[in-house]
Length: 247
Image (cartoon, rainbow, N blue to C red):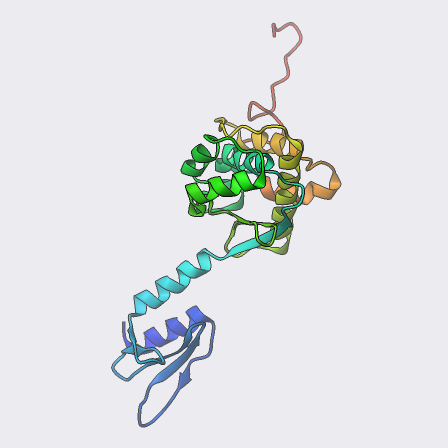
């Protein structure tokens, strides 16, 4: 790739206008989120500190960063006990495949190690949960941050570029999820397989309380990436039985 094409692609990638410096350097400069990079007349790319960078590395790193931007919804920890926090992680783990596919999440919100560990010990209080969390490791529950200092829960498993409507659907979803976790006596972490993702997820959303016109758009958005038919358990509308035929 020649320098002209390299400069053009970098400018487009960062969404900025390239500045040509003219004589005597004949270099180009591009403003990036990490600072200014310079492309000299030989095509070498350097940062403000003088560090040399590779074209492919710059492109791939920034693309990866964009892919892993997560939107955060913060809710109060108030009303939770250690048992209800475990309910929350169990509810997510049991439906994790559908949640990830629905939202386009690329990582496990609740890891298998976390799910096993949190269900192996007796937990009643928030202090019990905090102690278990420290033993298991917070990294194994990447999609939720438990901030016991600020008394908040942070849901952070919506990634990438999203519309305001999808962000609203995500916010409504985690609010209902959080509320039901506090109301249940016990939630199982056992996942169930399904050959009709839309129907299974829709039924679960309704159980969470996502009912009525208030949640109509949220239901539509959360179901659109899933396979199957949301209206019929079998995945398709049953055929009508003609008169005289046995059912």
